[in-house]
Amino acid sequence: MPTLRLALCQVNPTVGDLAGNSGLVRDWTRRAADASAQIVAFPEMMLTGYPVEDLVFRRSFVAASKAALERLAADLDADGLGALPVLVGYLDADGPPQVSGDAEPGRGARNAAALLHHGRIVATYFKHHLPNYGVFDEDRYFVSGDALSVARVGGVDVALTICEDLWQAGGPFAAARQAGVGLVLCVNGSPYELNKDDVRLPLVQRRAAEAGATIAYVNMVGGQDELVFEGDSMIVAADGELLARAPQFVEHLLVHDVELPAAGEQGAPEQVLADGMRVVRAEAGDIPPAPTGPAVTGGTIAPVADEAEVWQALVLGLRDYVNKNRFPSVVLGLSGGIDSAVVAALAVDALGPDRVVGVSLPSQHSSEHSREDAADLAKRTGLDYRVEPIQPMVDTFLANMSLSGVSVENLQARVRGVILMALSNQEGHLVLTTGNKSELAVGYSTLYGDSVGGFNPVKDVWKTLVWRLAKWRNADAARRGETPPIPENSIGKPPSAELSPGQLDSDTLPDYDVLDPILIGYVDGDLGRDGLVASGHDPAVVDRVLRMVDTAEYKRRQSAPGAKISMKAFGRDRRLPITNRWREDG
Image (cartoon, rainbow, N blue to C red):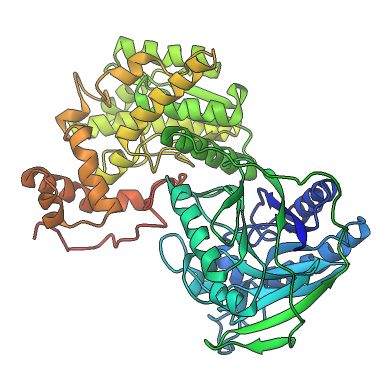
């Protein structure tokens, strides 16, 4: 049985950066060649980045993607890497966009992968299963492929597949078995969700059994707007054995020697299978010789605690949003509370303290301990700390307007927002907002006040998880002999907006230990009132919470983007009408 040395390049492309992404392919292919790889795979839509969303409809962008692929094939050959087969995802089209008046049935934009070899495109595959749920809208953009591409590489028949093809039974993996392939290369842009890695391995094992072949699964890593891709690339044998697995949230070259069945006689170039899917065969030709010496193994990475996983995802999502959009630094309001403390610690981990500005914005209602806690966090993390008292500005407003009650509370929040945006305009910082998912769910925020900002690192983090993250981050620092970044006072004290005398969140909201399970059932689980009550929640509290959630949709629609870590994040995942009279309580 022949052995192939596989190289899976778990890398971080940027949407729209065709030149930069091509450079990544060339650099990492060189690394793979230096490791004596015989075939290399890059993630889904590597050349364009993923997802490209409505850029698909721009014919200029599609043409640029196809031209970049041709250039990349020639550049790899000129780099002396032409003998090494390279599988790379890109955007293709064999007809006008489906939304145009001249659209043709069965033709249009394609989520594609191409095998490059000796300066040529020797095989092309169009994604068959197109996801249209959660954050995915691929039926809006792409036309499904109906052919499985099989390339003979080093005496092994290798099938090419893309992401969602793995998540559904039948189609390409069933075709791969009928085609008798020895290896399936699956290129992916699979976004992170908490515990998704626990789902992914059994899924790959099921598809390996369905195909009767080894699967090499390569996933991208990095942040793209709300999405975070964690990598978790792996190689699984036909019998389900995990052969190698890459770490999460970092770029990584996974190199592993795999023993594979030799290809049989070369069949017809095109074959129609029983289910109507075609198999199109190609020949890669000569590849680098089999390496000598001991077999290379890629190793497997042990899973980490949930809090560690989420923290890494949030750090990566924030870092890439800031860096890919070329912001020099970030600024946030430091209240001394748990949410702003966690956001500040995330920002320092993502960018370093010299790129983080924390501003204390005390009013007459700000407690002394909150001011001290904000200063303590700044000292612990080393960020740029400033104090801008807001009371004189609030008093000026009140001297010219007759306001009382909630209006005065919201005024304070909006003055703070004005100051943060002014610093953003003056110094170029990106403003980070700090409202957690629980607050966003029930509308516990002030529009154009504490909700102001360009990115929210904890937008998809329930309040109870915010506390868990803070405790984990401090414990992790202590374990490494470092200073815990978050003051214990910020973790232990009752949460409060401090916009009126003695104010606590519990004055307006149920305790978060009661609130979050209801919100998780309603928002993430789509449970109705009856389902929530049947789960053991108090009917009166359920009715109260659901009213708050339903009437706050307009606020969420205006909220800043933030990294998705749950199965249903606000925004791309959960799309409800603002004008909506349906209520679960009748």
